[in-house]
Length: 529
Image (cartoon, rainbow, N blue to C red; front, side, top):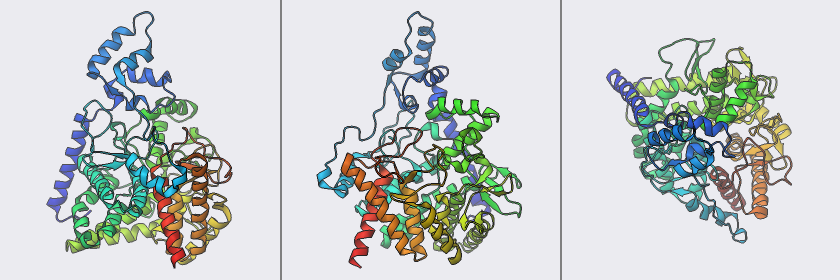
């Protein structure tokens, strides 16, 4: 990547290295703080949700707790649950005590809920897994009591409609802070997420803030330029290896560079420790490989989906790092476009030209490796097998959202959406029913919006409106019945109040609220026009 100069780029690398060293020194995760105790709690299924213990806050120095644990566990009658309750403060679900007013309507509900889900700047606690953020932010809700990366973009869409631009700016600033501190945006602001990111939506967040601060759009871009550069470096750092795959970079057969999801860890996720051990035990692959694939699937945000399963059915065949995801590479295309724009604003012609060229190369590579003319759909590519994966998923709408698809390709995608993905309650996530939460019969707010907006880019307004209508009706139907907006929905059987998954459905819910507000605003404008 060309920055202002070779010296400037070397300085950036130095800062990145310093960030990584700081992570190692001060951000120990619960697994590191409580050796022995952590594993004992997680494998004993002490809590119904494996995320509970990693989110607990110790009442004293962890070293003292571990010393006490080693002594106490030897004694007759030792009770692990009692020990944990005496030494830790258990976390509460976000918005647990909030009671909605169904009669006030869903729009009033969302506007009220923003403040319920809002978190003020965090106080630093060296022993908490929570990474303190300097400005207010919105959490999704339920068990998700911290900020999440890609969730937040869709939450921001609703904040925009609620005229809460201040909160959008706060959250952009928080993500820029995380990038400047760690060199990337973690999955969420927890120490146990510091080995991975999530779908990179930061450039879209910056663009959204620019659109809402039109008179200051150039200053918004300038203020976040360094963060965009550092995040791009995180995704494009090949560790000096110019062939095959290294970290998140894959060199394709034609010499192109594309990207994959790749968690730096190869051990069970702390928030799903026992579940990952079980999955690894069922697989024929070495355990460390399975853990990496599971963790990388979590980085994708689609945890889990038939997209990542070599047999298309079972988690034991997960092979996430073998896959070039079409959606990830579309997001990185947008990052390159935004970087080019930032260099143009700062009159850095050479850097601008480099980024424009990089974006064009990526665009061509996405079409070359991910467009399946036979099915008329954009699909993921298995770089190890040198062929597209069989999975057909809503990730295929991303090239429409980012205007990468040709008109003919958009026509084909539109037909597929209409005939195979569109159900009574909106769009189904994939065409496979595996029991994984990012498969049929579930629908998710972010994918509905990417499809709705993507189709609009190609003047497919009737279909775009129909998706928006069906999805919003399902959201509102469940709200009128339960007083809740949920993380995901069963879009095939609309008599159900929720979709299934690896954990109980969560209410709140950040991105559902955001997309629904955006859709309702859009529908009002369409009526007026």
